[in-house]
Length: 91
Image (cartoon, rainbow, N blue to C red; front, side, top):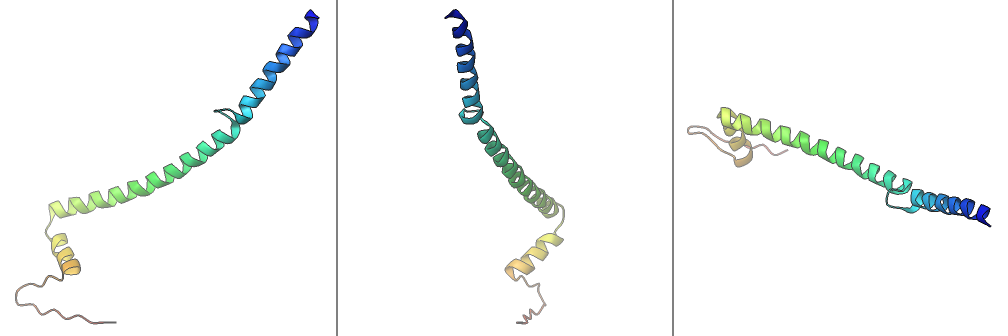
């Protein structure tokens, strides 16, 4: 009877470990899901990083020169200088 306890205990441990591998917190399906989520987050971070770089460049341009301010005012606000005539052509 003593000879059967050790193999039974080892088989029970093997079943428990195998169950943890497939259904536990660190299981293979759970890890693959987390890897996918991590890849998606890296992609979102890359897009946000590019947007941040573009905005930083725009802020830098706004701080350094007035040409960009004038260009923005003309395109977005319809600014017209003194002695200028604004003509809008509809397409």
